[in-house]
Image (cartoon, rainbow, N blue to C red):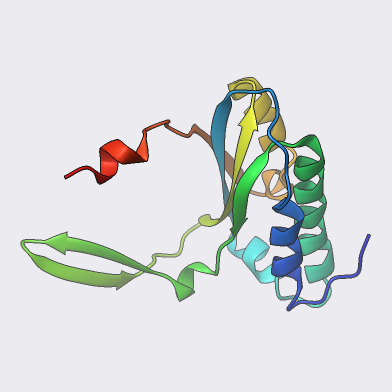
Length: 148
């Protein structure tokens, strides 16, 4: 495995996702990765970061080689984010609430069906400590969404 530095690890993970060919499959699924506070801490722990990022880079490479990955990437810690809502015409910004698990990244994959998407979800390193949500990506033409 390539030795990853803390600064280059997320970049290496995303680069491993690029350059894929379209498979014969027809369905897209999003894999949402939810991790625990301990998982987030492992990202920056000098004793754990290489294994953490290396696991995701290996998965990204495996998905790229299989020709199924369409995109994805890691997200910053929940404390770095905010939520925005509009109530009664007023914009409200708030901190992201921490909890037992938080969204830490995602993949978009092209596979034959939900069963195959779930099989790939089981390969995500965080599946052993937290959970991976599998959802179909809806095929809605952008021209309908952009029409006025």
